Amino acid sequence: MNINFIIRAFCLNVALIMLVIFYNYININTLEYRITNNYEKIISITRYFHHRFLNAEYKMYESGVYKFNDNDKNQGGVIISKDGLYPELLEDLNNNYKDILGFLPKSYFKSLTFIMPNAHYVLPLKDKKYIIDNDYINDVIKRKKLNYKFNFFRDDDVKVSSKDKNKNRQEIILPIYIKGVIEAIFIVDVDISCITKYINNYNDEMYTQYEVENKDGLLTQKIEVPYAKNDKEYIYIGLNLFDVMLLIFKLYLIIECMYQILCRMFTFFYKRIMYDSMTHCLRRNIFDMKYKTLSSRSVIIFDIDHFKLINDNFGHAIGDHVIGEIGKMLQQQARKHHLYFRWGGEEFLILLPKTNKKALLDYAEILRHEVESMTLLDGNNVTISLGTSEQKPKEHIYQTIYRADMALYQAKELGRNKSHYL
Picture (spheres, rainbow, N blue to C red):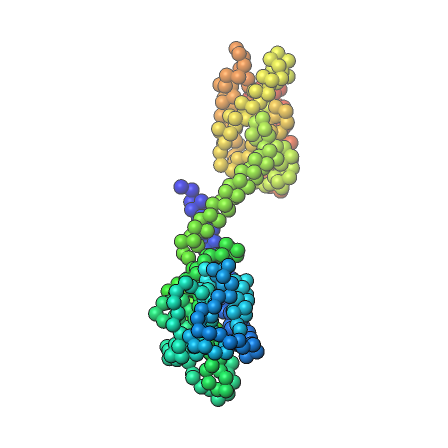
C-alpha cells in the first residue's frame, strides 16, 4: 500500500476526529440551553396556573367526576370527593396542556395535576375510579418533602424531582401557599426518557452526535436541571462514539473521493498542458516557461533522417506514427533527472545533468541504435541524427542548445545516422 496514502488517511482522520469533537463541543451549549429552557417554560406555565388559581371563579360541585370535554379523550377533568365550592380551572388546565405541547413532544408529556383538599384536577382524565381526600395532599407534601408553611415569599418554591422510584419520570412541583400554608399543589409529570428522542431530533437538525449518558465521564456534559435539589436530577449528555466514527468514516470517504477526483482532473489537464499528446514528451513552450534558466546541463538534440520523404512516400499518418513510436521509445529509455521535449515537428531535445563527452555520446548512440532497430516502415529502417553538447560555466542554456543544434547539422553533413559532439 502506498505510504503516502497511509499518511494522508491517518492525518485526515485525526483532523476529522478533532473537528467533529470540537464541533460537538461548541454545540453542546445550545443543546443545554434548549433543554433548560424547556424546563423554564414549563415552570413559567406552572406559575401562570398559580395566578389563575388565585383569580379563579368558584362553582358549587357535588362529589363526583366532571370531564371538561366528553368528545376528546385527551381532555382533563376534576374529581370531587366532597360537596362544596371549588375553583373553575379545567379550561386553564387544558390551555396549559396545549402550551406545553407547543414546545415539547406529546410523548414527553404525561400529565398535569392540580391537587386540593377534596378535589383533584387532572389531565388526561383516565377511565378509572378516583378516591380523593385531604390525606392525599398531605401524602404528596410528605413524599416530596415540601414545606407545609413559610413566612416570606421565595423564588425557589418550584421543585423538580424524580417521580417516586421511576428514574425516567420527573415531576415539576409548584406548592401554592395561602396565608403561609399550602393550599394546593400543581404538578407537571414528564417522561425524561423521551429526552433521547428530543436529542436525536437536535442531532438531525444540527448534525451532532449526542446521546444521554448514565453518569458523568469523558466527553460528557452535565446539564443542571433548574430547581433540581440533588445530583440525581442532572442530565448527562455525551458523544455517541459509534455515530462519531460513522460520521468520520463518511466524511473521510467523501473527502478522499473528492481528492481522487481532483487529482485525476489535475493530472488530466496537467498532462494536456505540459505534454505533447502524440509523443508524451514535454512541450517546447514548457521549456521556455520552466527550464530556460538551467545550469550545469548537457544537451542532446536529434531529428528523424529524411522525414519529408517518409511523409511523401507513406503519408502523413505514417509519419505521425513514426514520431509517436520514437516518443514511446524515449519514455522507455527515460532515466532519472532526464527531461524529454518534442522540440519541433520531428525534432526532439533531451536535457541531462552535467555529463562528460564520452558518457554523453554513449547515451546518444544507445538512442540511435534503438531507433534503427525499430520496425516502423515496411522494408525501410528509420534513422536519426544526433547533436550533443555540454553547458559551459556561466553559459546560457540556449547557447548550449545552439551548439548541439550545430552538432546535429554536422552529423547530417557527415552522412546522417550519426552522433556528433560540439
